Image (cartoon, rainbow, N blue to C red; front, side, top):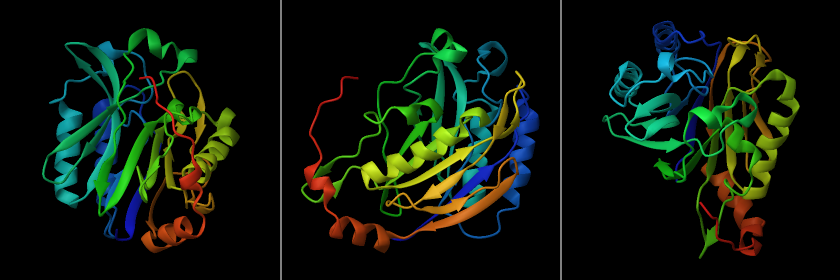
Length: 264
């Protein structure tokens, strides 16, 4: 493993206006001047958290996918974002991990947000995703997934961990911001993994305020970076491979984790 540079993009989103959002993210990506290995956008970066697929859902070769492909190539970095996808089998809140060479991997949101009736419109995913960047194994989840520790539980086997960094892309309301902060830290501590959580700011189409509070934490649950509340920010943090390994070697809790089988 090498040190991993991760860029967190905390920003407002234009409600159900894909072209405006793509133009805005184009400007934000263009402002990133330092090298980075991974760029993270908030959940449903191109529309906001809408459950209106008729207006917002795209195909896997739509304009937002083309945008991610172009920008990953131009910046020579991996980009993670979620968008609403409509396919033959239904609609999904889908996370896309886009590589500079145009390859991509996907993760469909497992836990659909019942309070917004997301589960009535979209289909839940059933498969976890772990990607690798610079030797780091990275496990992504989407917003509400963060509340379910079993789904993101790390594993240890013969000295190896399933993942090293947990990423959460979110549209998490300010009214529950304290829960967001606590859960990000908890997921890092219980899994001996670093954490990066990226959240939007501003009002959505229903007038719900989002304060952002994007964060990066080390595997001890200590804050490496915390975005200013309600402010648009782009920050690149460096996760230390040596620090992660030293902590895991000195505190071998992974060897005592319970073994279980998750019903998917």
